[in-house]
Length: 360
Image (cartoon, rainbow, N blue to C red; front, side, top):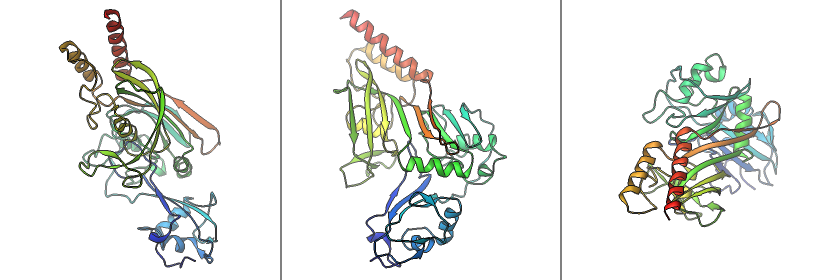
């Protein structure tokens, strides 16, 4: 039997999960999941959880319950609910807010879809998702604060209003943003439960041996360089991550691949592809901004330099996003075309390969 005052350092069934992706900053939400011990006596859920979760006061848990973010057996409950043995509890709390004033800015948004509950955006490369660490303006959140300044969810000092997930500054592609608290809860739980669908397209160095495969390995911040992430032996450091890949097109010294995510770890695709020896093309954080395959000829080196100039970022695009609409229950699937920089560099490699084959 677990004593109600016993901290969960000893509680095996508790798990903290951060469902985020491609970020340079901290998590959007704190996600927890636990199953109540068979010997647990009836106890208010806010008391039960505050005794077991670090940095989770009863008032913070009560606020989460009021917003429908505390679920027992997949149903929202109030903070007065009495936990029972075997209850499956899921909790999602907004990450503690930082002292940061959001200034609304009239920045154009590429809107793919919008209704009363949510908006789907196609983020260009170079746009930071939310303020922090030297990017205190000119971000997607500043743009959202301007476009939705009449909505309660965006009329606050929260630096991450409506954000469900995110992609890195220099990654392009699809993002869904909630416009109501109810939508934010529903969509966040879908990411937490891994029921969303996400597909990326990447240009990577080298000719992959297999047409498709799965990359696994814990991802965590590097112990040598805190600015990048790395793969650790399972159970050592980091958090479990799974990436499925499939070769779309072989272009000689580079391959165009499709990546599907089971998890959403920071820089996941970039780290996993480097781990198997195929860094993303022009990824300066993970070694892809060097000539890793090919010849030593001056003409080839100039060709690669020209390609780098065409796409001055990692060659990664979030092409497809799928989820269940929080209000209608309808499955929504969105796809976006490749941005010009990635599409043009692919054509350039095709032409290079074609000319090389003719010469051969």
